[in-house]
Amino acid sequence: MAAFNDILKRIKTGAILVAVVIVVLWIDNILLPLLLLFFITFATNEYFRFWHRKDIYPHTLAVLFPGYTIPLIFYFEIPPLLPGFVLFFFITLLSVMRFPGSRRKPNFLAEVSANFFGVFYISVLPSTIILLRKYGFCVSLLPLLLTWIYDTFAYLVGTIWGRHRLAERLSPKKSIEGTIFAFLLTFPFTLWFNSLWVKKFDLIDSIWITLGIGILGTVGDLFESGMKREVGLKDASNVFPGHGGFLDRLDSLIFNIPFFYLYFITNG
Image (cartoon, rainbow, N blue to C red; front, side, top):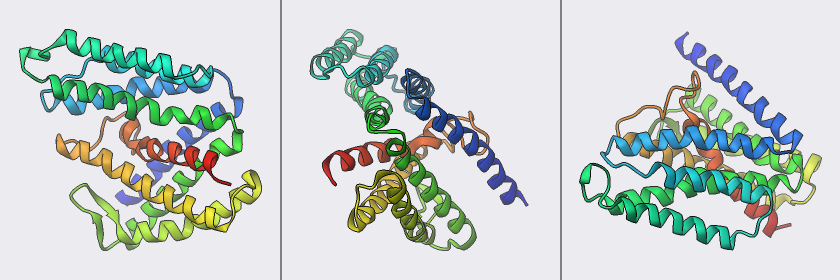
């Protein structure tokens, strides 16, 4: 009964999140970068939580200001070279000015690494959805739907029939059975959505896309789980009932959106 209630809670929360994202993608205006700014704000807070438990304190402004700027650069199609260099210098300057770091401890290397990686992980990667949306609503929706479908199949099959753990130390509930069947069950949806909307990929492309969505999404999930396990956390936060925090909910998409964007613009 508890497992059923957990699944029901996940479905309700997930349905609301999916509806919000679909509406914002459909409208296709400044709401999309604003939604990303909303995500970046909360995801950065969760990201900082990981580091703070290691007694390492990334510079808030060095992560948030570039993080807020990148979605706007993508949205307004500003050539990225000059602003990218300015943001790189900005992060570097704040890191140098703060030396040797919080609490007067020599954490410079850890803090500056956390600054740069935070911007890349939380802002650059997910902001590629803005670039993908410029090719159309259905194109931008495809990696999201495939990720949600894959995750759903992996979770359901793993919950019911999963016996062998995929990476027990990182994610005890993720099973080999769920992973394999999620690939097989997601593939028909890749073919179907392509035939309905994109009409650009052939059978081989659909296989690679399904494999990419599954592999990168799983790695993204395990990667975020690794950060949590390192600092003894079960969830990044408790924002979403049954889902944890923003990073818990979107960890797979952070990897899958840029993967699909790169595949889309270089193939077919």
